[in-house]
Length: 112
Image 1 (cartoon, helix red, strand yellow):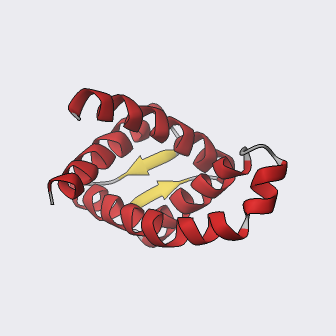
Image 2: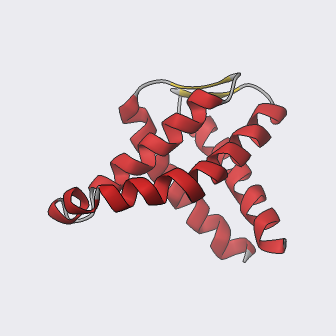
Image 3: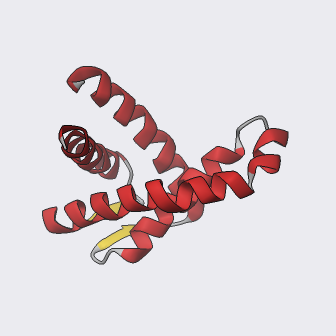
């Protein structure tokens, strides 16, 4: 239970930081941020492994760079599900997923 709550807190903080860094990403309220964090966590644990499994040959051929596209797709999908949050463009989703990974790793190293 402690790992799940730490995961939710770190992802919520990371999403908030990245939304402040990017003009193409908007989170309307704290409630929307919390719902987005939960939906993003659910999609990361269900949809993302399935996509990674089926796209393994493409990921192998691109030396892992296609994983960025998968991460961006999952992030864009989470933003499409939740209301009062916006992420404009698929390229912005890929950039946001890269920034989200960087901020997550920094926060995990500080808080874990």
